[in-house]
Length: 310
Ligand code: FAD
Image 1 (cartoon, rainbow, N blue to C red):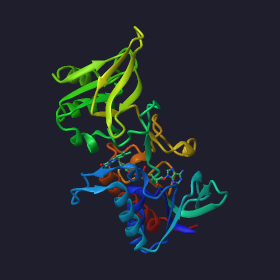
Image 2: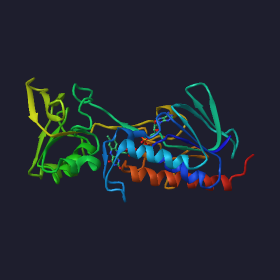
Image 3: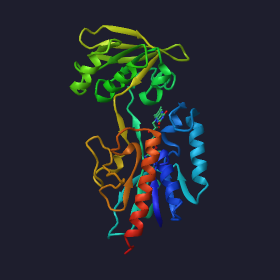
Image 4: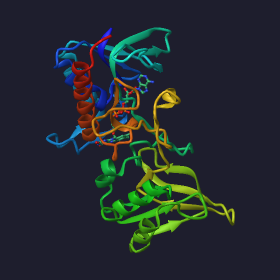
């Protein structure tokens, strides 16, 4: 059995594995896709001390760093069930889709999240070519340009306020007849001179010239008219879905499905810790996920030295 078993091979999982392994304890990593969301990222400009890198390059460096340690990496494996230890300090079981099951005295869950997509023509084709999901990451690339934000919830309105300070103009597009964001955010948004708010607007297509985004088509849900807006970028902010469906019922999750953790990364199941985008941590970023992954691994180590095996 393992002493620390990490589920997930993104920034949080990689940091956990390195921190755990450096304690000299038997460490394993199970990942569906080692690298995580970073693999889908073009340029990364906010990883402190590295002014510019690319996602796939960053993912390779992360994997190489983990491989410098004695970590058992099980890539292309999906965890499907977490079974608590039968007695305090006992072995937690992780079942895999391939039928195998792994046992470990402690577990770090770092399964990350995925952005909900609009599911309209052009979105996939122009992903990273004008279609973006992370304003903190990609906002500065649109300095002085015209962008849209899809979604009028808190994250959409926050993104629009954030982007309005960087870009030339922001069009906020909401499907519903009104915005759902907190009143204080809506008031702030309406006070900005370079923002247009569209409600009852259904985005139906991302337009492009073959290389990059040139606009958005939307349908006015009241009148039924079809409109086009010329744009350089489209930020989709209709939800970040944590990869925690497989944990439902076994672990405390927030109403949004995020794993509830305390400041040490502990979950509601003894010996099980969690980190990164899959958790209730505020702000979903690489540096934050790595910090949280390190915290979770150190907490797992602390748990191991304080909890005798039965
Ligand atoms: P993830 O990176 O999501 O990794 C999750 C891991 O868990 C993956 O290995 C996955 O395969 C695995 N997994 C999931 N479910 C299971 C399962 N059931 N069994 C086994 N394995 C499983 N952040 C920045 O700081 N700067 C940026 O410039 C930036 N740009 C971004 C651009 C894009 C397009 C996207 C999508 C995100 C961007 N982010 C950026 C956000 C950043 O990528 C995430 O915050 C970070 O990757 C979160 O790390 P994580 O380890 O928590 O999760």
